[in-house]
Image 1: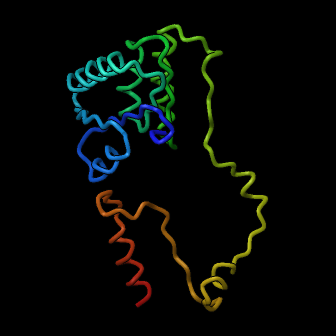
Image 2: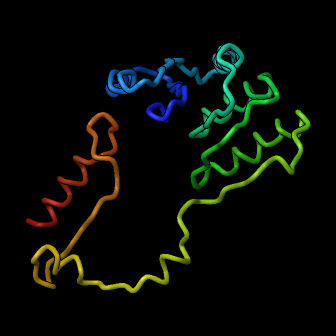
Image 3: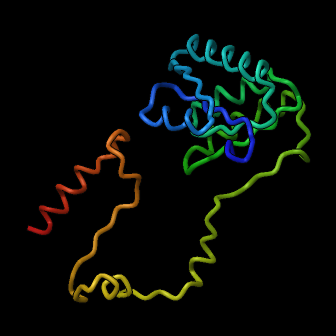
Length: 174
């Protein structure tokens, strides 16, 4: 988006190794720690509200439960022209129902809200012919070879337990 001329900002709770590359790509990065305490969250809402007003954002994308809570509260205090997009994953839907109350309290017309369900069309995936041994052939492996996979970002700083996965896979192989 920054390369297409949009003024892109990223608001994060702490420093990250990719910030230099993001800034070099024209993305303005704002570090704003989010405290788990009530008063800390209130301060986060106040700081985010000031940022939303100062930058006059047109759209804000809220990702993950804590960001949605703070962001939706701040958005209720921001200019009416601000549009909010929320990404909801799995069990986080319960938080979304709770934060929807802020839209109701602000008097947001339900006709202006569009819900976008999970972007994966599971029914379309079910219609794809399944070839259980395609990957074996592509990798030149015998059909008896067991394949185990992990779908995740393989980045050491995300601490997603990849080492545990690799250690377990080695034990299974041994």
